[in-house]
Length: 171
Image (cartoon, rainbow, N blue to C red; front, side, top):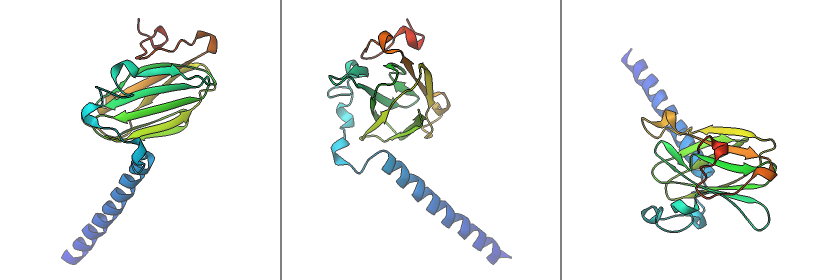
């Protein structure tokens, strides 16, 4: 009987190890951690470069596309709400300040790890509020970690860094 229990525990342990390894490697792959060009120094994350507070949010590029800069940190996405135009190519650049974070929005999976910059390309086909929730456990406040992207008609879009616009339900 004891040998049967040992075998059962061994099988569970091996399965858990294989599953954990696959889950961790898929998170690394999704976050593009292996790409050294998309690395960032966490010590200067808020002090210099593209992720300083004044650069967060949506900004229109010369070609008409929109780039969103965002930081995921324990229990918040900064900015928590961003306004973008409908049917325009969106380039999302996101990094993490502390642990693994991830979410799905507009059918695109986004994963990021500390020290890496993840870039994803999105397009919102219709006006509306697109909410997303962190799907990588990051601590006891994880359940409340959410963000929102509001897609508005092109005529109503006004790019703002650190977007806190009325479309997001904030003054």
